Image (cartoon, helix red, strand yellow):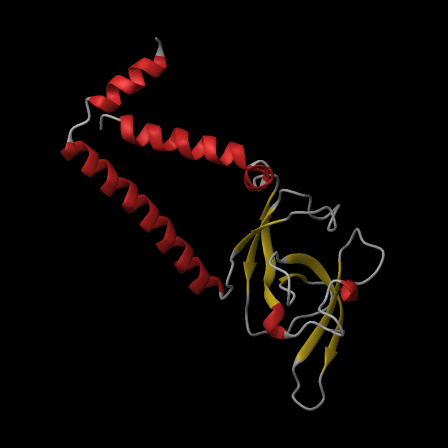
Length: 180
């Protein structure tokens, strides 16, 4: 019957103690990942310290599938910086360059206008209805580094959910059938 039969036999031979040990190990891995994520959030000051570029709007600088590392400091945002922002009414953050900065006279706060490097016009059509500028609370962070192409894993699993389920199933089977 091959490897499938071996896997089924391995699952049947698992003892309760071994199953509990594997469940605790899996729980520790998940907990460690969450702790690392929360630590990155605290260190970078960004609600999402790592994002994947999902479109070609920032080419040639960033290509689809690049991973960006974000940092959010109290320094004012300047023209030319690459920021990641959320727009009211949209779930997915957008990665674009700041092209104009507008300082409010009454409060001294800075509002920004963005544009994708590969786009013809500015982003006002992407903003919420009637919104002309992005305010500080819209900005998730500034891009401070990137890893090319590594984000394709996320894109593939989002666009083809069957691959995600196969991968999760295979990893689950690996955890259940491991002897250590």
